[in-house]
Image (cartoon, rainbow, N blue to C red; front, side, top):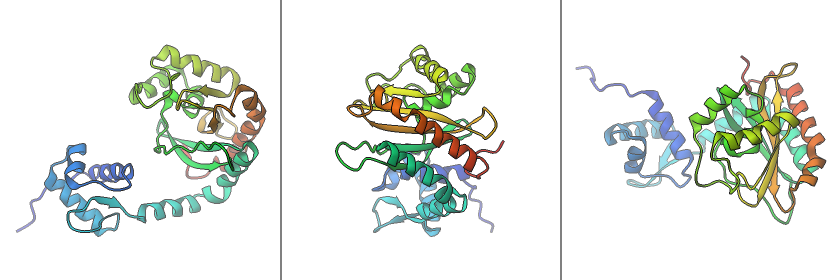
Length: 264
C-alpha cells in the first residue's frame, strides 16, 4: 500500500533551520514545534530528515536539536566560489584597518538587506562587535537608512512597514514613527552618508553609504563603519567619509557582477 502521509511544505524545514540558526545551543522538539506552529509529529519527521542529511544533530536521545557545521561549510564554499572571499573581503578588511572600527557589507536581496561580511578594525580598547542576525533592521541602523535613502518614499515605507518598528532592543534615539525615520533618511539622501548616534545600540554610533550597481543608481548593498560613540563622533566620521565612499566604489566596480548581488 502506498504511503498516504501528506508531503510537508519545504518552507517548514527552512523555518526550522532559520530558527535553530538563532539558537546556537539548540532547542527541544517541543519548543521548535510551538514557536513555528507546526504539529509535533510533523516537526519530528522534519528533524529526522534534517538529521539524516547532516544539517542538525542531537548529542543524545531527548537532547536539544542543534545545527551542525554543514551549513557553515556550505556558506564558506559559496562565498569562495562567488568571489566574495577573494574580491570583496579585502576591500572590507582594508576599510576596517583604515578606520580602526567595525565594518559591515550588507547586500540587497528581494527588498531585504542582509549582512554578508564584516571586519573588525579595532585592536584594543573599547570594541563594538555585536551579535547581530543576518537581516538588517532598516528603521534604526545606518545600513538601513543608507539603503532607504536610495528608494522612492513609497517603496521605503512599504519595506519598513513590513518589518515594523521595534519598541525594545534599540537605542534611545531609534525612530518610532515614519516622521522620525525620514528625518534620518532625508539627511542621508542629501549628503550621501547615513549617520546615527545611540540609535541602534546606546553608546554606539555608525555611518553608512550605499553601494550602487556600476553605472547606475540602483543600490545593491551598503557598507557601514560603526564603533563606540566616545570615538565615533561627527568629527571622526568626517575623516572617514572619503574612505567609505571609496570602498563603496571599489565594491561596485569589483563585485557588481558577482552572483552574491541581485542581477535584475
